Image (cartoon, rainbow, N blue to C red; front, side, top):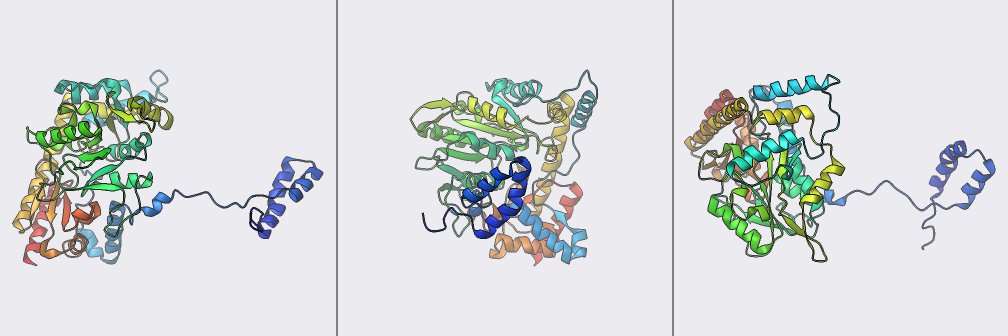
Length: 460
Ligand code: MLT
């Protein structure tokens, strides 16, 4: 020990003498005892609590708050532009909730208002009525054998992306598409599964799967071994979809390499092509190697209500350092029991109502509305001479920036000149540079107005 180490600095000592001792004195009335304590004990040097330094590795802010910050700044400086502003940035729904969900949530609230029907804590993994409805309607009715207790209800798939890392080892080699929904990457950074960031915003220790116009934004399985692969189809941000053969290629890879696929199907309701799978579990063998994430945000408009679920098949295994292969399901079950009390009862009733006959019809109408916008916006981008992808089986249009502009330059220009907010592709990863994303979540009126304004891009 070096001189002075482990001994309180004199000011701290003085503070303890004056305030700490006063408090101790109240607790122990024996003045003599306090005097001895204060003079004989040397406290170790202390400071504030330690930070999870993985957070220091994170690049800038989370993409959408950064977009919001720039928009706020612009609006503050340009009140006229602010009045004309149309937001096609974050993929947040704009249309009111389906009436079936509203009615169900109101009924549930009324139940909570009466002693006979009141409910307190619900099951941590979600109410049986919702788990069984999901398992039956989304899976078993489509010949996918998912048991009710393989459904875990949550407050949304963004949250599930982070939660699932609780039960996965930090040794895993993680592969993510590039561009990608930033939450997959950031949650791994926060959990300490990566090295530091590089200049282009990528992280050491993550295996990136480039998604480019050349591969139609559907990545090939890597040549080498990875343990964990994130896939999202229909894709955010590119709007791409993967064919049955492409997904089968991924399942083959996972089986061969004992890899785990984390399949984000939050946008499955937007698929219009009957040949495109809605679930990874449509692919034979996937029940042994995939976890699926789903959400009511984009079909039922629950972005603010918050409800989603994971499908954790009992047949999915993970290994321990000493070579055992254990099912993940009991650990996922355990994780929820300890860390959550699930989602509010009225919200779960609302989600259940989305599966009723009227609920399904109303969800269909919502999706048709947003996909109508997607067509308007995609056609407008093409008319403006821009190369546009997606927007057919997904509510996102992925557009090449004109005249070699970077995606943030284009963002600033569209904000300034068109008063339209888009999302810069670079925010989704290095391969997103040179692209921008237009979200179709809007009113028809706004989508048509954005279409008119996009023409200006062509002229300028
Ligand atoms: C997006 O804009 O990419 C999404 O709205 C983000 C999300 O669903 O969390």
